[in-house]
Image (cartoon, rainbow, N blue to C red):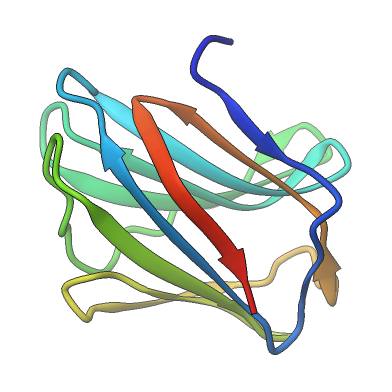
Length: 131
């Protein structure tokens, strides 16, 4: 798929934080951030501009999407820099959006380390950092 950025073999371990900055493209209807485990997606973040602006979180496991979680704010604007962090704990992915809102998304796969990430559709990633 055009516009996909993959980051592989960069471990995000329990207690570590992923920091992402980037820009939604001018005409983006949505963009997606995935933290993967093989063919499963432990953490799926879909930032949606079309219709009602919202961020939807989910998990894709054994070929099936889980229950969607919709919470937190929507600090995203086309062509404006965003920054958010995702901290992995044994129980959850703690997301801090740039407006200060927190999202507590369960670590449904239960792993203590995830190594693969993808950024898809209407987004330009400026930085990707784990510490």
